[in-house]
Length: 312
Image (cartoon, rainbow, N blue to C red; front, side, top):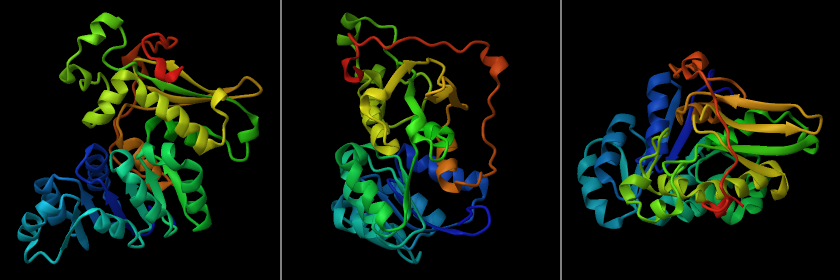
């Protein structure tokens, strides 16, 4: 199914978060042919209303059932159905979309992602906890239903794009890059005094609060190592991390012959979303272009496992 030649029926799980916003922004800027079946959110009913009135899905779902009256009132006369609660989110995930963005934060995203996988949809996976909690089961469910899981994390999208078909047995290492976050140059004493505001001030990426904190502590990279192992069938001892402060190289694949392939791009989450939406095609959109001369230098360093033991 070519995203560039035929409309796709779409569900966005977690539409009001950072990835959800980037997904809808990509659709807006690219003019991608989409029919949105459902948008779901946790508690941000105001933003969900704005999105529902713009995109006119079949249903808009808010997890917080106390917000259902406000959602219903805001959608009155629009033709968009309002629903609430975790069960309603699972129902939305199982509506039979062609493509589902799984962007609910944390383990709460697992059940809806599994429900979507059972329909045979293409799952654009931004919810890494689904793989960390139940990677082999989720991938098996998607395969059995005739669907697929395409990663949206920039690191795993990079590996997905440069991993040559049928060459998993020729891979020596998967190398995930990490910016080092806001505390890359801080010592342990300074990190102990860090504030939440400092922790979410990521130097390169615009992300939600949870993933920003996880990035600052490098816990996010530890989860990504597990995710990469499951996604690409690579033993954990062959998944490595290198610190790359510029976030231009998103990850690398080293083959047994010594060749190392990398995917590069500007740090914009809409790029891996576009890849997941249009694969194996490519979606034309006004993406920020990579100007290597403007960067001048790309630098790398080994991770400090004393300060960041989660990736050891």
